[in-house]
Image (tube, rainbow, N blue to C red; front, side, top):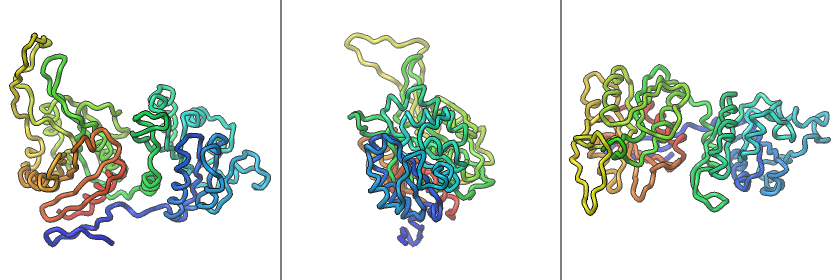
Length: 414
């Protein structure tokens, strides 16, 4: 097992939880999207994780992936027909429905999501979804406009309300040639997410305060100074912490993300508002994780009316320093652990260590944002830096990364 050594201190470099898929029965439902070609690798990785995998194809999916290839990696004949004479009493849907622990649909097309949401049973896969008591996990894949369409989002909301687990699609190059949100998560990310579906309650009884997103510093009623933070990492940490048993308060700047279900969320706009929210809620927190990208400076005098453009003239703004929220938290007596984030474009670890000392925090989570890396993306890579050690978290989906980070924090002796 690899170890990271720094100043004589060792941290286990495998901070992810061990796979919980050994012996699990997974129905892999494959619907008709181009991402179906990835399911051979997905099935192989699930088998390698110890799961028993049975693939079920829709008719459309059979045009994108070979049944023979799926059978080769799973050792099981692929099922497609609703009425299968080789199945028990020719009722394949009942046999498979009772066998499964998890029904994973990957890729889940917009059409399949609609059928699932409305309870249609016109093929084997959708009939299984109605007949099984297994956990339903869906990994959508589609064009970005289809993903954002109100009908698709409404169908997803219905499925999640009924207990389905969503593995959100990633951003990147799509089959239509566009770069947008709609890519199915990569096979290893899906396997890792399934392994963490029932995380250990290692944060049970703990209270976490998490900040996320950007802050907007108004110039006038129309314009503001902001940054490129999407809030995805902070929100992922909040959701993972709740699943691991913690009581979570999320204080977030302006984002396009919905409030995480089951988590008290306070929305703010400016650095000063975020500071006030942290001050009001800091006492009693076992951990504060400052994932927000708080603006260092704000405008000293916000104009009451929209500033008009002057011909051939520039605009000078007088900026003043905003409150240092993290340094304030670190200076409080009898506090819990304070974890800062450091987004750097150069000298990542050197700057992270300087921030660790300057702010007086217990640890820094550092990531590179050079050339736009890490901004508004679903994947991220972090370094966990303490006064005596450092550990590298590999580039993975932020939901998985959040579990790894929190597992590390829960087990680490500061």
